[in-house]
Image (cartoon, rainbow, N blue to C red; front, side, top):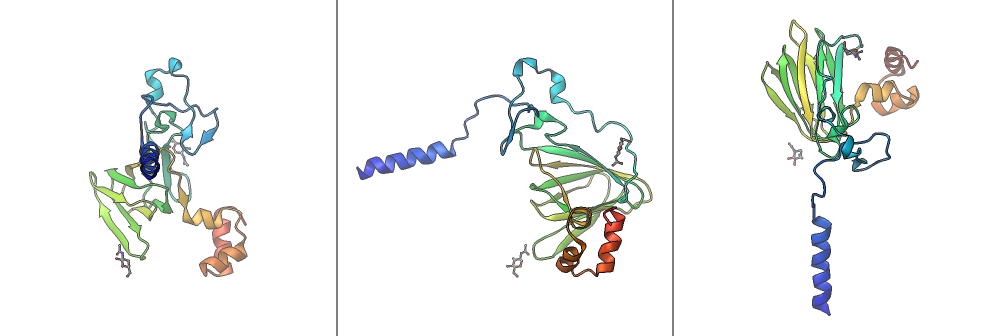
Amino acid sequence: MKNLTFSFFILFLLGSHSNAIEIDYCVGDPSLPRGPQGYGCKDSSTLTVDDFIFTGFRGKKSITNIFQNNITTATVIEYPALNGQGISMARLDFGVGGVIPVHSHRTSEIIVVVKGTIIAGFIDTNNTAYYKTLEVGDVMIFPQSMLHFQVNVGRTVATAYVSLNGANPAVQLTPPSLFAGNLPAELASQITLLSRKEVMRMKRLFGTA
Ligand SMILES: *[C@@H]1O[C@H](CO)[C@@H](O)[C@H](O)[C@H]1NC(C)=O
Ligand SMILES: *[C@@H]1O[C@H](CO)[C@@H](O)[C@H](O)[C@H]1NC(C)=O
């Protein structure tokens, strides 16, 4: 009896750890409900090669926002073929002096610079900042969930591509999360130790005051 129980336990473990692949791919159908594992699959008889291709990185990107950047994401939302693949990309364009403000994702991220010169860095949970000036061709990893940032320190525009090990990595930019959303100024001031005046300046910058 004891042995039987043990056998069931082992079977249970094997079952729960099995990662059997049942289908080749599951291009997401965003009109279907979305669960923690992603979207339901688009009818595979309707798929063409174009379902697997993303063309949103083409061409020149315009720089108009206050951070002087343009972020083009290729996540499962814009590119449903990534559904269930655990991978995504983004193109980062920087005006002169442009930045991607400090932010984090649910995933790790790896960056490669293809134009210009940027400082890239992350800050770990010990408040140690690891940052360096990257030239064209240089690659840096931002470990999972760590706060990280990029700054164009060259005299020209800069471009980099990143890859993230999740199909829907999300981005949580720290300044907008504090000052562009519905967090009241009083709370923002209390939880950051910034003066009420500085909080109001930030909220005006983001058009929320
Ligand atoms: C990024 O560049 C594209 C192409 O020029 C443009 O359509 C888009 O509005 C820009 N996005 C931002 C946030 O400036
Ligand atoms: C962070 O600090 C703790 C405590 O001082 C230390 O044990 C740990 O090794 C540090 N981690 C890193 C990545 O430096």
